[in-house]
Amino acid sequence: MSRPRNPFPLVLWLLLLLITPLWAQTGVDQDQRATSQLREAYRQVDGLRDITLEVRGGVAVLRGDVPSLEASLKAEELAQKVDGVLTVDNGLRIESKVTERLSPVLSKLRQKVQTFITYLPLLGVAVITFLLFLALGKSATRWGGLYRRLSSNVFIQDLLRQIAYFVCLAAGLLLALEILDATALVGAVLGTAGVLGVAIGFAFQDLAENSLASILLSLRQPFSPNDHVVIDGHEGKVVRLTSRATVLLTLDGNHLRIPNASVFKATILNYSKNPERRFRFTVGVDTEEDLTFARELALRTLQESTGVMSDPPPQCLVVELGDSTVNLDVVGWVDQREAEYLKVKSEAIRRVKESFDEAGILMPEPIYKVRMEQTEPARRPAKKHPVAPSKEVVDISPETHLEQRILEERVSEEQDLLSAAARLE
Image (cartoon, rainbow, N blue to C red):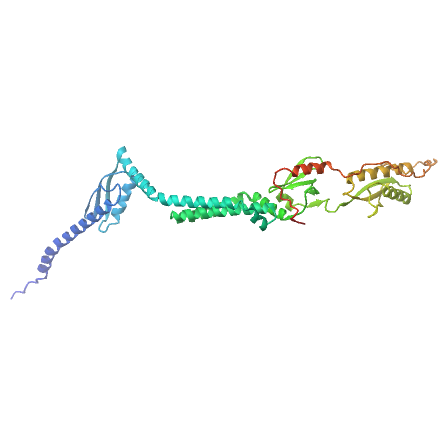
């Protein structure tokens, strides 16, 4: 008896015959859907509308002309994003005709012109807003009474004017950008301004330091106009304080400008703060002279000299015993409001020298003595009785030439931050 055949292979063969056409139909439908989807996408992009395309077995075949390489890459990128496309056969050609290349450019230009025309009303409103704030800023610089009430310092008043102007200018610019819906540009402008401010701060560090020093010097003035000062080794009389430099008139009549940053950090010697000023000079007398007599003669001469103050009284001190002289330090005081310092000192030196000469007090140059044995000592000349100092009239009045020059300089329209209302240190 024969065994029955297994029907499973026959059934499997029949199923494969039925399913294969269905798979093929499914692949064709997927290619058609991908082709339709990609064609619809190309219609929405300028320069890609004329592309011939077909998707076969998951391969997107692109043919035709495009205006630029960028358009070709864009078409390939879109094709790769469509479901059912495994790879792209990019056979697109770059258009070389001038008219075809210019066509998309002109199209974009027309769109931009139309957009600009649409924005013209908003642009007009933004410009008017900015101009209004600009006019407000210029008007704010003329509110002199307000700034004078806030500060009596001229430099601070000018600084407040500038701050008010730039605040109005910045507010107008930001509001105009907001009207144009350029908020991203506002952020970019603020960020750029911050970075630029830091860069400018480093680049102009010395200028910023000088400006800050000008503000501090104008608020707490270490000197007044016409003060006789020595700043960082430079001597002269103060003419004015500007926003950049302190102007001195040297004793030789020359203008000297010292940066305010240097003035702020410098050691300042002010001879005019205290009108009483001391002068001193050294006189060397012979080692064999009577020092008590020489000191008394120098003091009496100073007391009788015109311009030397009696209170504080003059002094004469023995300060050094040298090889050939004994040095006397002669000190006196001058009231600079009534007498010229240099004239009084000059006259005091002259009178002491004449008094010593008339009294026979030797004031030798540096010498060396040679002792000779078995010789008679040289005879010194007889002492003369001191003669009363002469009553010669000497001009010791204060010097007014520099003061007159300073008054003429201060009449000019150049900026001056020195104010009588400011606090003096």
